[in-house]
Length: 336
Image 1 (spheres, rainbow, N blue to C red):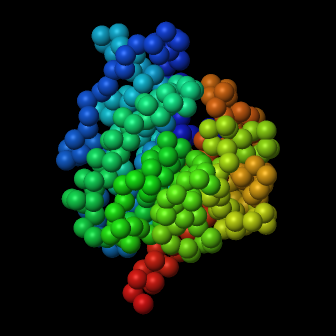
Image 2 (image 1 turned 180 degrees about the horizontal axis):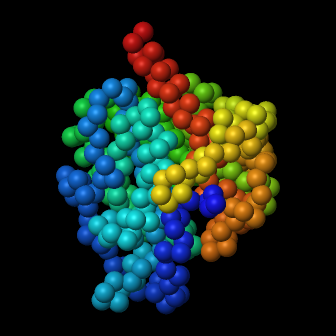
Image 3 (image 1 turned 45 degrees about the vertical axis):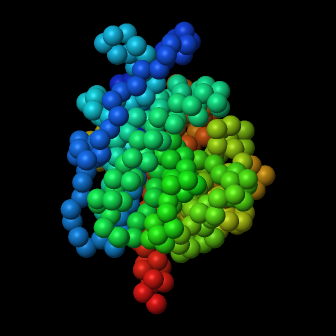
């Protein structure tokens, strides 16, 4: 049983790392998406009866790849069938989490590759601007053509969480913020400087706080914190919804859910506990075998004991319950 599916896609499918020389070449950019074209969306829901929408942004699922002309590309080609296959496992994880409560909108975008996150910070940010321009375009298309004035949730994992945070910082209008139920940024970091500077980055205080940011990172030991996501000042515990160091016992975990490639799943009930360690601004979890979840190919980013790949899976049923509660709290507050 493979319990590690979500962030990376099928590692066997993904090709090996490109050479150092490839990073010295000029970037090759896939065609910019046109979000009026349904091919650039995971799905276009039409059902009614859901109280809110979710705009969901998937994590990094693609490695560097080489074009037919021999160019090394650091970005996903959203229309490439094999790359979509790798991404769709993460799309389905988001769909499984949110679609019970929300209409699910998720754009394919020119996400930066796994090797891109292994570069210096300035180079990561330079490449990420391509991905984020796609996210802005998709979000604007969603707001102008699909949202229809409904309450909505912003959500993303890893690179997708960064996109959520950037949308809150720079893109949401005041009217859109009024319709924001909450923002779930799984597996990223928000600095104190960002919290002080950007008013829409307001960390959630509890399980029903609305128009607030839910953000956390999970490790089994302090040494496993990734430098990419250190010093998150917006942390909350998704089991007991506390922002202090009060531990949540495994008995408070409704179920950790792990999906297979065929969309079947396995659930670990009341297995994983978690507490905030304020000294590292991360969650410390218990109940799992680090070796079983360790992915050697990305150990430079996520050492053994880092559960970045499984940030959604670990707390899946608690998150699903919380979505319903936050939506209810939002609609109740707006109707009063």
